[in-house]
Structures are given as structure tokens and as C-alpha cells.
Image (cartoon, rainbow over all chains, first blue to last red):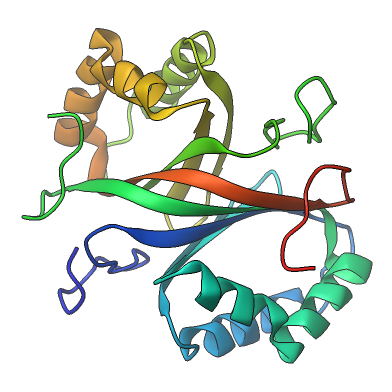
Length: 124
Length: 124
């Protein structure tokens, strides 16, 4: 998906690789009061950061959630991580919302999709 | 999480970076008959492939799903993609199950987690 093309609902419209992705896998604790509001606020704050390309998120009925954010470069990710509002939410999340989480910062080397777009291929 | 440590339910027990991850974001079409069986079979087949490190998956009530698989190297990912059974499932998926999907192949450079493990840190 080239930037500027319309992405289907819920999908991020990322440019041709390379770019970066952060995979945040989490399980909520029992106390979820205020969680949805925090998550929506963090999404809104991230989306106006320099280097932000998009976000995709899913949480299943078993409580496991995966959020992937896309960024132009690792410096943009580090700046977002350092952002005070985000850090405050992280700290609150550690105390209140998340039983466990894992964060993985990765450089996207290839992408492809269905229905197919022009730029992307992998292994063909 | 070092390999060999127990991971919380639903989380992959990946080694210290670098390793690789494949993010598969998808939306199902209306026809989901047989989908769960196919997904379980693909997970079982992947988990015995050389280089497979783990998998995490979530699908929300809005129908958007994210599955992340973890691998030692890009060659292991390419071999899995070429696997005939997997390719057959992909083809069936294109026709039957997936309205849209995106696949992103990425090299994990850093990871960190809560509760904290010894090896991982980022931006601190």
C-alpha cells in the first residue's frame, strides 16, 4: 500500500519498505477501568508524531491483544517512547492494566498483500 | 524472554534479538466455514518447521486479526512460505477466507517486556 492509497478499514497504509514496526503484545489484568480511553488517547497522540505511518490493533476474547504501529525510522520510535504523556501511560499501564506485555521493534524488509498492490512481493 | 523460560499463555518465548517476525494482518470474508481448522493446522505445521520460534495471534470482534510468527532468519520464513501445504492454504484463503490481508517480514532489533527479563532493554 503506497502512502496516499486508501487502506481497508483497520489496515495501515504503509509505504514501500524499508520502514519500522513495533509489535506490542499484551494481556490485561482484571482492572480495565479507563483502559479504552487511555488506548484511544495514545493512538491519537501517536498519530500526530513525526514519522508515524499507521497502526493496527486486535484483541481477542481470550484477552490477548496485539497492536502494531508503523514508523519511518527507529529514531521516531525512540522519540515516541520518550514522550512524556506516553511514558506516563506506560507507567500507569504497568501498574493498572497490563498483566504482561512484550514490545518488539523491527525493521520491515518486505511486505505483500491481497488484493495485490504494485510495489510489494515476497518470495515469488 | 530467553528460550527455555516459560512464557505467559499466548506469548511467544523468543530468544534475545536479532530474530525475525512476520506480521499477518487480515480481515475475513463472510465465509468462515473451515477457517478455524485451517488456522490450527497451519499453526501446527509451522511450529515444527526449522527456525520457528513462536506465534502470537488475536482477532477482535470487529473481524480484524493480527498473527505474528517468529523465526530465526529470513531463509526459514521463505522456506515456510514455499511449503506446499502452506501455499495450498494460502490459495484457499485467498479464495475463501480473506477479504484482505497484509504480510510484513521484519528483523527484530530490540525487545523488552513487563514483567522485565534480564536481556532486553530499549531506550533506557
